[in-house]
Length: 273
Image 1 (spheres, rainbow, N blue to C red):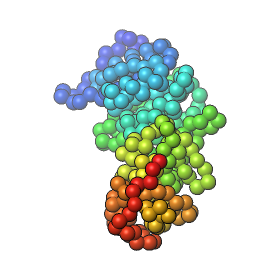
Image 2: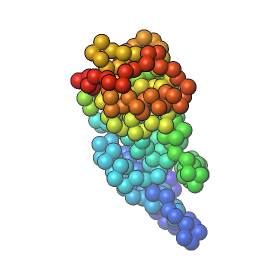
Image 3: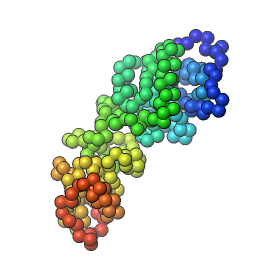
Image 4: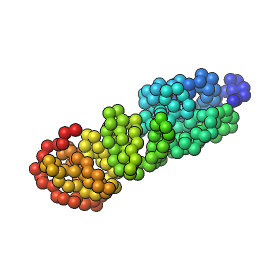
């Protein structure tokens, strides 16, 4: 993959410049070693960790918070897309997928990767990728801030869902169900993670088991039990908890949305789940 790298000296960097924290994730020791040598040539890069599995990578990325991660696509148990799905808001600023199969290239970009390296790659290709990563990190950009789609992997397929197309989110044990029109997708994230990460994207928590896209809300109406329901534009009715009601109404008012039926100030207790 590379020539005489072991004899090459690290490239010079400006004194006092902050180093980029990098991590390598690959189940093949030789592949990790190759990337390690390439990165060690860069005086402006600090290799903060190497991982041989997806599970280990998830823990180490969250713990060490690297800015640049080279992530292998094919690994036992959890592959690169599994790791990406579980990272959620912890995705590093610059994510580079590494793969031996070019069929994953398009999926890598769709999933929000900065770039991909097709094994075996040349030194020149690596340098080009690293230059792009340095530029993104220097500009303070991140993968998650630009990605508008989620990569969701199931046993049968890999699908990409636009966050703006999601109608509402439902809690499902350690997962969440994304309701997108007539389809439902399982995402390996918790409700608290989704609420935190999407709060600036027009989503609002209305219940401990439901988050809605405010663009899909038609209004509120009284429920038969004395509480209130959130009515979506497709007619779906979801229970509104008292603890989330004020925040929802404030955001609806700020967005110019209307309330279909005025609620009484003496609503009943929160509906049990």
